[in-house]
Image (cartoon, rainbow, N blue to C red):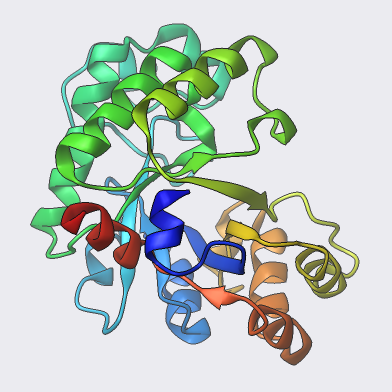
Length: 271
C-alpha cells in the first residue's frame, strides 16, 4: 500500500494492461505492435523473443516459463536442470506434471537464466510474471519472489489468490510468502476464459465493474495469421485482439489510471 501511496495511485482505479506470451509466435509480436499497449512479458526460450528488442516505449518483463503445453511450438529450458524436462527434453506439457517433477532449486536457476537471456537479447526487463501460474507451487514461489528482490524486479503477486484457480492447499503458504516479502500486490484479472461469443462486451462489463485498486489485466492478443492459427487456442487470442481494438473497450480502458511495471520497478529501486 505504501508504494501505491508514493506513486499517487492509492484509492484510484489503476490498470496494468499486460500482453502475455510475447515471442511465442511472430503473430503475437505483430499484435503487440498493432495495439500499441506497452506492457507485456517475453517467453525467453521462444523463437521470436529477440525480435521484440528496441521497441520504443516498451515495458517488457520475463514471462517465466516452466511448462510447454502446445504440440507445437514446444519450448526447452535454458538451464541444465534435468527435473525441468519431459522425456523429449522440453518443459513438461502440463502444470500437474511440472509440479510433480520440478525441483525448486533447479526452477530457481532456470528463472535466473531466463532473466539473463532476455537481457542478452537487448531487452531491459521491468518485471517477472509466470506462464500458466507455474511458479505458484509454494517452494518455487518463495524462490521466485526472493529472486525478484535480488534482481530489483517486481514480481506479479496476486492480491486475490482466493478467487484464482490455484490448488487450495497452496493458498495459505502463498499468502504468507507474498506478505512476508513485502512485494506490491496487484489484483489479477485473467481474460483467457472470457466468453467467445462477445468478448468485447465482456471486457466492457468486467472492467467497468472494477472499483478502486491496482489491476493486472492479462490478455493473449495475436494476429490470426497462418502461423498464429498453429496454436490450438488461436481463436481466443484473435478475440482478445479484436476486443482491445474496439472503440468502446478503449473508452473503458481510458477511464483507468495507466501504470507500467517500469514505473513500479524504478520506484522500488529508488525507494
